[in-house]
Length: 324
Image (cartoon, rainbow, N blue to C red):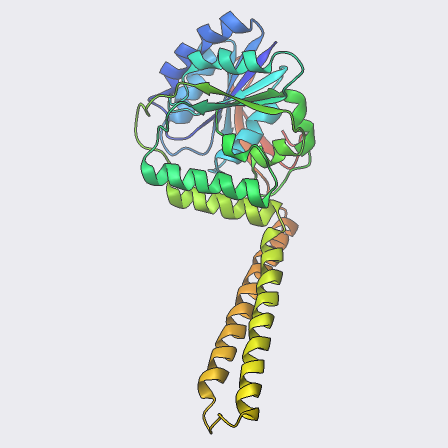
């Protein structure tokens, strides 16, 4: 089983040397054919310098530099399209995913029962708010996107490289590796692994970022918000009919006065709210269609280390597997 390890890198100049030093011996033991792909996602510090130096020192390490910060999943797509071996392992750059746990993922992937394996922590390594936001996002993915295994999703994953054919034509700025992988297979499993505390700095994935990621997934890969708007309009219509029946009954019974302002104001507010919410949801979809029509790329590669370990300046736009 040959292995390509893809690591999106952002503000990780201090942790990358230790990560690679621990990773390479593990890969030598479990898979003689292996490679490590460091995708520097427009990091403002010295991460690219460190990654390029590691690629120069170690034959099995390659570095790819994106022209700006596109986000973790976009960087993962870039690295996955660079992978040359049978299995892709993705992990974070902050040492929260110990390299020594990779054999557990690969062991679960051996055979033909599974195509994709997630590493689940024995204990949550994040704070309460971050963990709550993460669980909420996964529940939303399970309900709205129909991904049955969404609650087991993590950034520490191993899958067969052939699955990337399912998102060969993936383009646009809002990429989601897990949704794209769900298009390719239902043979998904998970194993419990030990996670570590972040070695340096703090996570860039705040609860706000997780909520934004959830919104991107819902609006980019699901029609559930449109259905919700339809249900909201149907519910508002029922409430309006009930209010109309009440007003008519009070008129027939002679209980009405010149008043009626409260009822009318309530109905106007109710229907206006439903209409504005529905228009807002439609506007989000139209805006994303407009964004896709502008041809915004998933990523642009500005440099990568070649076989001679020297950085090469290129212009690669990530519209699909041909845009490397």
